[in-house]
Structures are given as C-alpha cells and as structure tokens.
Length: 80
Image 1 (spheres, rainbow, N blue to C red):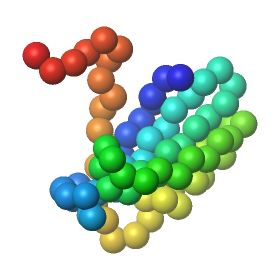
Image 2: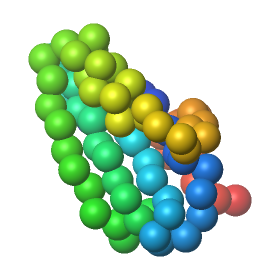
Image 3: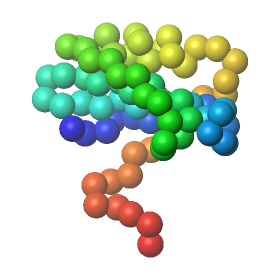
Image 4: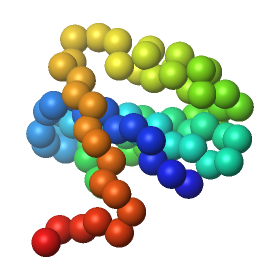
C-alpha cells in the first residue's frame, strides 16, 4: 500500500490533533481519518475510485481547522 497524501489540522496534542491519509493499493483507494496522533483512534474508508476517495476527503477537511498537506516520506527514509 502506498501513501499518496497526508493532511494535518495543525494542532498539537492528543486531544486536538487530527490527520487524514490517502493511500492506494492496486485499484483500491483507502482513506484514514485519525484523531489523537499516533496512538489515536482511526476510522477507515475504502473506495473503488480516486474521485470517490477525494469526495470523502473534502468532507473530512471541511470546517474551521487550518488543514495543511504534508509530504509523504520516500520509502526507506527515516530520521537521521
């Protein structure tokens, strides 16, 4: 599975942080909505088309948060 996009609401802390991820695996598109950072709770959505996945992403990013798109790290990249 390849991560294509990552959005973050710009807030720090377990109670405030929200993330949305777009991933692709063959012909399937996966959206993860995560609340609470790395140890938070996730909700997953699966789609047959990229367009359908983006419709859900647009709805998840709607609201008053200042969402930022983060670049995914290249495979094998880590902290140095």
